[in-house]
Image (cartoon, rainbow, N blue to C red; front, side, top):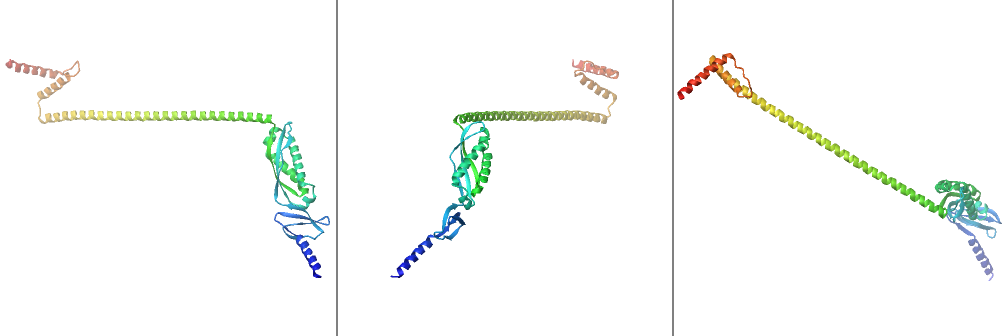
Length: 309
């Protein structure tokens, strides 16, 4: 029975030892105090705490965290009160400073964010506030990051989630936006009408050019046809003249070949004069040597007609 107290003591010691073994998870850190004073920071892994001497003062998450603050009333430079809610992304970089730098760090962050926002918006007018989100975000992130360095906190990003002006100003802005949309729509319609008119004019111009070109080509073709017809008529007339000349030359050649006397030649000339008289000439001049031959021919004609009578 003497071993029972020893067993009890051993069990109690085992329980105490096991109860003082701690495993720090990834992205966590434990701030350890020894006899009420800061001792160390436990990082990832297994650690053993000295019983009754050491204690875990704070368990700290090293992940990036998000604080979404409710809308805060702020006043612009032109005395317009609006509601702005802010989102802050931060990360604890020094667990010791976070544990001992400030009491209630999250409350201190919220208060600092609200006062910084009021200071920045107070230097801006309403229109600047609505159009300068990036500038406001950058300024707030810079100021908050610098102010929270002694607390072991790094501010990575600040965003203005909503900016809510008073209702009457919202109504005015909506009317202004509607007027601007109507103006843009009217401009777009006018530009569309202008483009359509330009396209119609260009189409008419192209059609006129095509018609003029067609008429030009038709005129050229007509001129070419008339030219070819004139050439063909001239060729026909030339052929006819050459045929007549050739026939005349052949007749003269045959006449020369038969060795005609002067009377025959004069008779041929008289026949030619007769043909000339059949034309439209109103006056014919007959050579003197042909006049006697003409009288002879007339006498022969009378002599021939007399017996027939």
